[in-house]
Amino acid sequence: MPIYEYYCRACGRQQSLLFMKMGDVQKSPQCQYCKRRRLTRILSRFAYHQGEEARLKNLDTNAPRDETFYRDNRNVGLWAKKRAREMGVELGSQFDETVEKARSGKILDDG
Ligand SMILES: [Zn+2]
Image (cartoon, rainbow, N blue to C red):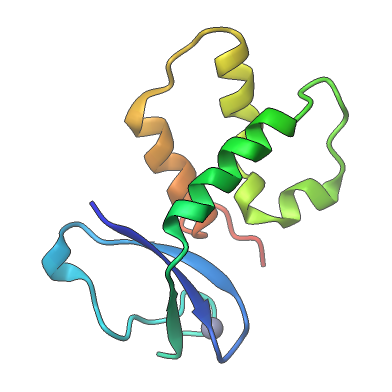
């Protein structure tokens, strides 16, 4: 299932959109936040993943997380992932899906 990163030119928010299949990928999807069709695809999926790996590496699970940590939606699920890795637990693709949903605001409303 393709997941693309978008930047909304109307409200300036970044979001990940998950499409069930390639054929569902829309040229102008709707912004999840302001509902306008001003999304620009960000072609940085690869870099984004690298970023997450780097974030995972740098994340200290023993350090207290302040509220700003979760203001960056890329940090949602990161802590749980890191902890799981440290404990040798495989979270599986379902967890990744949940994280993606959370990051794109489908579960958490970060208002
Ligand atoms: Zn928007």
